[in-house]
Image 1 (cartoon, rainbow, N blue to C red):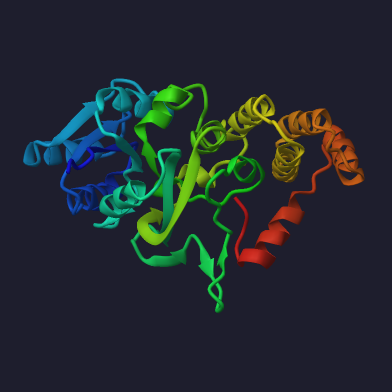
Image 2 (image 1 turned 60 degrees about the vertical axis):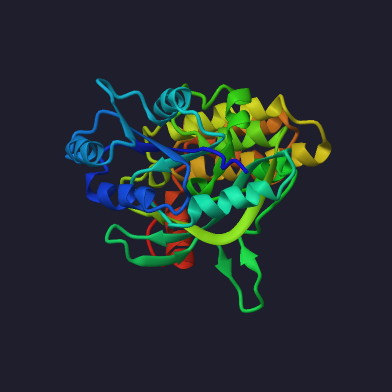
Length: 322
């Protein structure tokens, strides 16, 4: 029986502090049929030096060094074109893989129908020193987990809420080929990939913590609503794509839920032009309520209520908002 080839695409930009642990976790995989591609997107720290050291010691690593910074999406697409695996892992080199990660996800795919394009899992969250911060999915005393995972046809779910930890995904190559890889015009890939892939492919949740996701100040997820960051503009583009893919009233309401969420956060972080664009999209979806009509007026007048978001984060998380 043949063992499918799995390609791990390792993307690095200034991850020198975490790179050795990340690459060691790739090399420690128990799965026997791997190819490893490492892309450095013009790091300015010691990342290249470390990667060259690994490439010399482990010839199975294919190292791609950029002469200019092209971003995560274009870097991934470049490596995807060079890869040969039936299954793909998009691996940021500030994260860490569990040794059984690849083996367990390939085994899960082997038990699923061919309609399944993504297997995702739980993840342990770690800080900059690799100390545990808990898990992505919180588990209650009765075994209920939050956020609630979804399986099978998940298109409306990915429209309406965040419930997937991005670095935990293993993706069937055919999915990425049908999509043409990631959209290089976007500042990040996750939401766009979920929306486009979930329209035609099923998802499966494997309830095991097979990845460690590192939480640190320079990670993309910490910058989404910062002034000048391009991720919010990318989110608006993805919502516009999603509008063309909707087929049912349930999906339309899920998209409206997403737009309301993004509009609130855009407004409460003083991203007024983006908030205005989102509220315009909400009007197109006929999702404006009295609350969001008021928000529209506050946005037009640029009334500063950012303290509400800071207060909420102190109450909810015991810290300050980004």
